[in-house]
Amino acid sequence: MTNTVTPPQDFEKKCKQAEREHEARKLEILLERVKKQIERRSDDGRKADSATPPLMAVKDNTSRFLARSVVFER
Image (cartoon, rainbow, N blue to C red; front, side, top):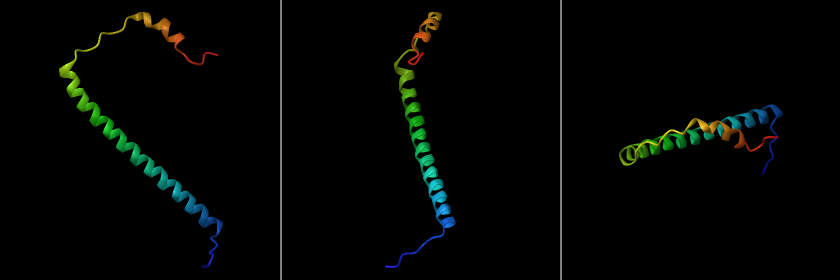
């Protein structure tokens, strides 16, 4: 077996290409997930529209509770 030594430029090019391919694959997976979520929501939306009435709006008193809901106040 022969060990081949690649010049540093070639190694950097291969690393960058691998990063681009990895990012492209992550984008493909993300797009697939989003498409599935949209399909589920549209399917659930059709079922929910006919089965349940719309929710009532929340009153204006919620503004004082929002300040307390912050996890990291300090």
